[in-house]
Amino acid sequence: MHETQRKRIIDRHRDSLTRHGYHPHALYWSNREIQEIRFRVLAEIGIVTGDSVLDVGCGFADFSDWAAHTGRAVHYTGIDLSPDLIGVARERHPDLLLHIGELEDGGFEPASFDWVILSGSLNEQLHDGGAYARRMFLQMYTLCRNGVAFNLLNARHVQAHDLQSLMPDEVLAFCQSITPRCKLIQGYLPIDFTVYLYREGKA
Ligand SMILES: C[S@@+](CC[C@H](N)C(=O)[O-])C[C@H]1O[C@@H](n2cnc3c(N)ncnc32)[C@H](O)[C@@H]1O
Image 1 (tube, protein in one colour):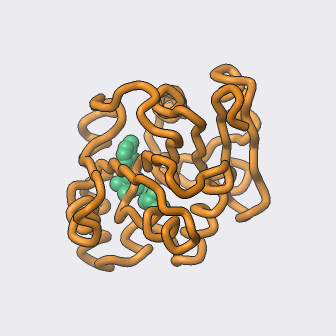
Image 2 (image 1 turned 90 degrees about the horizontal axis):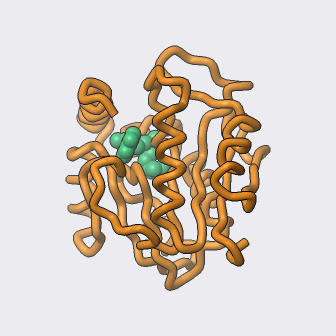
């Protein structure tokens, strides 16, 4: 990602954190329920107690709380571009592995995690026709042993100058070029879709 785009994302979250503190609004989610619906759909890829999970764009690492409260005690690692959000996440979760940055910075070995998930972290408009997002899908797949689950805004229902939204069928077709073991999930929220990519034998 270009340095200017990275700075814009960091600055936007610094500003939202100053305004809202620890709250879904600081992550640009409208409320906790909407955030957790997305978590549920991601987890339904097959995440269970004992699994390791890398959360890309983890924000406050809220997925780890949600997973624990819903009976999934996972080994959680988070990475986020925002040092401010990671600062809060570290205060709330001193036990977790939480990194500042993006996957393209490197640092993780292939097949390091059972599952790699992403919720809302590709909703920032990068004006690249989805090229960065496609690189993320590939990198996430490289890092997983079982599979990848991510959500995106649906371009059929969201068209905003400052938000990235993509067409579900086009994203699915790209993911099928990574692996034929893909699944598109729709209908859980009007503006959103989720894609699962599985390693062989893990679906
Ligand atoms: C909508 S928030 C969601 C946070 C978290 N996934 C959740 O649902 O609670 C998006 C997060 O992605 C982070 N982010 C955006 N682009 C990113 C990237 N390329 N790599 C890592 N983090 C990113 C932002 O800093 C922000 O914390």
